[in-house]
Amino acid sequence: MDVVVIGAGIVGASAALTLAERGVSVTVLDRGSVAGEASGLNAGLIGGGGWGDRPDVEVTLKMGSRQRYLDLAQERGHDIGLDLTGTLTLIRTEAEWDWAAAMVEASRRAGRQLELVTGAELIDLEPNVDPELAGAILDPLGARAEPVAATQAFAIEAQRAGAVIETGCTVTGLRPRAGGGWEVEVDRPRPRAVGAEAVIIAAGAWCAELAAMAGVEVPIVAVSGQMWASEPRPQMLRHALAACESSLAWSLESAIRVGDEEAGGDQAGGGLAPPELTHRAGRRLTRHLYGRQRPNGELVFGGDRVWTSAGDRTVDGDGIAVNHAHVAELLPLVARLPPARTWSGLMPFTRDGRPLIGPVAEVGHDGLYLAGGLASSGFGRGPMAGQLIADLVTGRDPAVDLGPVLPAGRVRRRDDTRATASTD
Image (cartoon, rainbow, N blue to C red; front, side, top):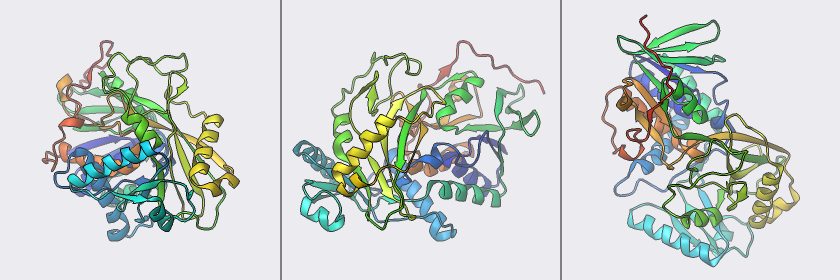
């Protein structure tokens, strides 16, 4: 079996490794480099929480990805900066405490392992946080790793298993062959068509652009994420950190979003906005925060999520300032540590908030698969997304119900499709 994977990020590299180790002939194509986009630009946070009594697809994506990182570091010997210390989601207000308590109780009933800690307990866990904080949610299974190193480790293992990874080549066409299978047209090192029985689109924020070449409309949009890092410092943090403020705000959003149109001339495309954004129609809705201290001593934080046009990597200085001030409220020492560097990356959000993992055969495209829409937690869920899509391509029954993330009913044939069957 021949498979082409479009995208050398964390999802594509993980899928290539799984496929190659199952004896599939795999070629990975990327117009940039391995981990050149969101997979290499994020904070490196890995979710935990435990498997629980009846793990659904969301739990499987998180905990399965965690296991794949453990395999890279502990079984395959890659130095990916894996740290299993845990994650603290900090609580400031009474309303946040009530929300957190409900979350932890729901977790306990599901057999998962989140814990609610008081302010006094929090200081013992993380001495440099604001002593006036009400407490935190502790995820003892939360982890972190170095994004570029981890993604490259998956790619290295895939190549060792026989996968071919071609970077610096842009996909210019994608069309079904009349006799079955696909042709993927690329521009470098020379214009040519790469044939395959199956194609996996794992191109992050560009999944919709690639799918459109095949005549498929995919509800994935690019959302800009803003990040900053301090100069390296002696150890200040033991855990990865997040904040409850945005989680509470998003939990209060209306569940009915049909007809919620994105306004503003600088926004992408109009239509139903993705959930869990920090801005809408040019107005800030909430502050969002996550980050950690890297092994080199840098503090790395981010949070803003702005629906943007694909390809817009403009760093919003005001957004960086808001995020820095938010971190300083929770970690006062940061007030004296201005950002030393800033950057942004494009994340693939779906309009309904659910990943897209599976075949798009229902629109007449047998052998075409999607693996994307992992939003801001692509690094934390991507390795297992890659494994699950590899299961589907090779005819294996996934160990979890994929119904909520399948493309069926969520993608459609484009009215203006220009895809034509090749007779080669």
